Length: 124
Ligand SMILES: [Zn+2]
Figure 1 (cartoon, protein in one colour):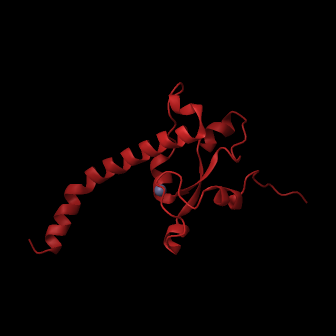
Figure 2: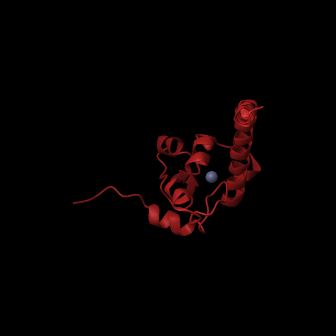
Figure 3: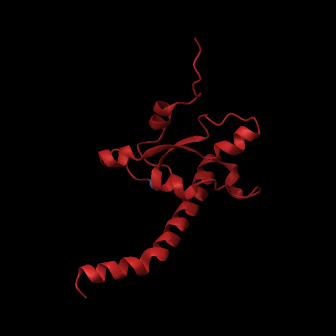
């Protein structure tokens, strides 16, 4: 019986991660919660590679990502011709920048609301 298995499974992805999440660099082993929110990240979105008939579950395309960063990155892809396409490392750096920018935008979006809630709690 043959089973459909990715070329580069979760254990391999985990072992290659250096114990850190790919975009935010948080320590995977810092807590059980940190580990529990781990996801497999396809650096180049799976949907794009699948559509071109390219294998997406390979060592170069897989990484460990926290659920928060994975949600923010979503289907982001740096534009063709961007210098980050030269290496995996620079590609990850560009995606990290994008994720951090999304996180900041979210923070700014909710900042006023959070401040209001905090003032209310403090009785101001
Ligand atoms: Zn993260």
